[in-house]
Length: 285
Image (cartoon, rainbow, N blue to C red; front, side):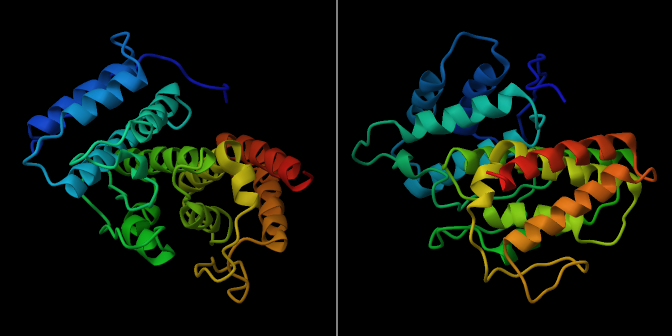
């Protein structure tokens, strides 16, 4: 896999439910992601802020911007520079000076109170502004339909690719300390490395998601403490949830097994090997 992809993107972010503010926000984001203009992340942030009007609900407007960013991220390939540019926009928003009767941009994405949007663009989870992080149960409820899709049709392949892109976005948010998505990462590892064998093509996508988490936010995950978190695959002891040295070692062995198993697709084997190498480096410090 190349260090980063920079090929031009052809994005269409419009939706039938967009209002005037949504359209302005999406237009600014689109320009920066596709580099169709020389606009900077700071300028995009200012344009987003200017889309706010007194008649808008402050909290609802911030939530709407988060929704647009997540909706956008699923169309940005996991290894494409546009994902990093989207994170730059979020950072620029959080750096805007606070003004009276304006959204508190410094908190955008910080609470983790954002939506996982499924491939159709529908909201799959409810928000909870009172919780500092998305809980494992709420994540599972939102993502389970995509996780359980076997890649046996072109439509399902697209949906699972969207899920991978969303994970890469969350990994970047975690990497940069914007929003801590440890539960989502844990579920991805469990799905890929602790479950019975799915369709071969599905396993390839699962391993790609694990690799994205490791290459983008592996050092953060190694520091994570979720000992009380639920969620284990059938191949792991349910009495030992969360991240642990023992579980990391189990995942390393599973990646090694996939790398050596000729029954998997070449991409799965190659990616498993790369993921294993990254993990070994992280474990050795």
